[in-house]
Image (cartoon, rainbow, N blue to C red; front, side, top):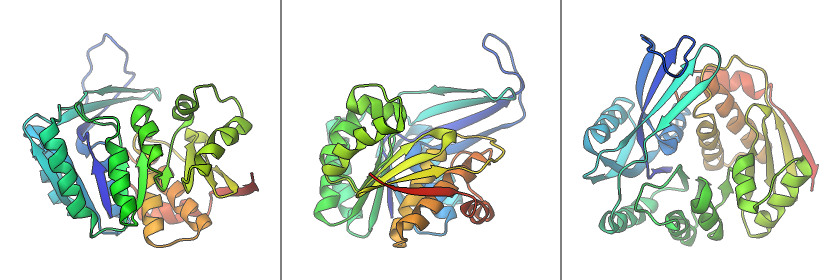
Length: 309
C-alpha cells in the first residue's frame, strides 16, 4: 500500500488542565509525533500488520524529525526532499473536553518539485495495489493535483482512496476515486446547500455514485457514519467508549478501509474494521494510534443497518 501526504506536519499535543485563552499554563503531558492525515493513515496501517510505503514532501528540521520517527516505527518511506521547513501543528486538549488546534499552512511547493513528485509517484505506483491520499495540499500545488494522481492510478487499475476537502476534493472527484470520505460540512460544500436530514445526505451522494465512485463514507463524528455503495446505504452506530483524543479518528478509519480492501474483505467486514479503527484511535492519547485488542473488542459492538436507496 502507498500513502500520500502532500502537507505533512510535526504534530504537537499538549494536555492542559482547564485551558483558557489569555492564560499561562504549564504541562508535563505533551508529545511530538509525525503528523498530517496521510501519516496518521500510515501508522494505523502499520499497526494492523500490513506493509505500507509513505510518500510526499519533507523539508528542514521538521522533515528530518519525521523521517527519524518513521525509522523508529519501522515505516518504509520515500519522500521528495524540499528546501522549506515542513509545518508544525499544535493540538491543545483541555480537561473540560475542549480541543484547540493551531495549524501552520506548510511550505511552498514549486513547479519543479511538483513534477519531480509526479515522476516519483509513477515509479512507486507500480508496486502497490491500494493508494491513500489524505489531507490538504501544500501551497503552490494546483487544485487538480489529486485528480492527476487518481488518473495515473486508475490507468494501472489501482484502488485510490481520497480524503480531502474543498476544491481539491471537487477536482479529485472528477477522476473517479474508489472511495471518498467527506464529513457533513464537506458534503455541504460539495453540493452548495445545507444538509438537515438523512434524506438530504442520500440525495447528495447518489449523483456522486452515478459518476462512478464505488464507496462514499459520510462521517458523522460521534454519531457514526453513513456509507454508500452501489444501491445500498449502511447506517453505522458506534459503541460508547472513553474518548481521550479524537484527532486522527477519520484517518484511522481510512486506514481500516485500505487494509480491508487489500485483504479483499466483504463490505460488512470492511465497515466493521474501518469503524473499529476510527473508534480505537479516539481511545488513545496519541494521534493515529490503535490497539489491536481494542479493534477486536469494538468490531463486535458496532451496529450496521443495511438499506436499499
